[in-house]
Amino acid sequence: MKILLWIVFIAILLLGLRVLNIAKARQRDNARRSSTVPPPEPMIRCACCGVYLPQKDAIAGPAGLTCGEPACLRPR
Image 1: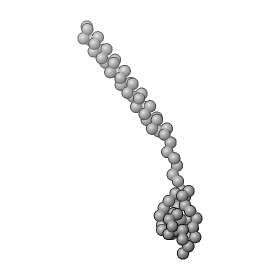
Image 2: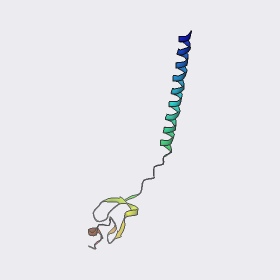
Image 3: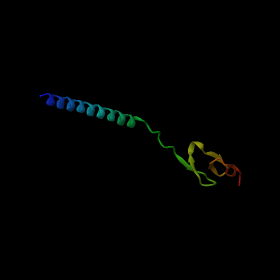
Image 4: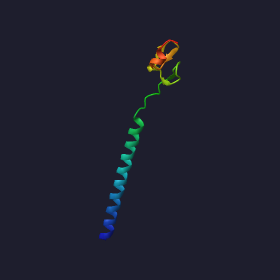
């Protein structure tokens, strides 16, 4: 009778640990999903050298939007 009681006790303990582990895994998944990824920035191509860069970093040059390198900012 004592052995059966210990088996039931251990089974309940393992079941409780399993439920706790599942709950923690769900919290981790929810936290991972809720972390927002910023939207991608529009990219443009430098009119001089052809390098792609974010539109917000582009500088107006004589040939159009450029990357800002000195060679690309000089008039041709």
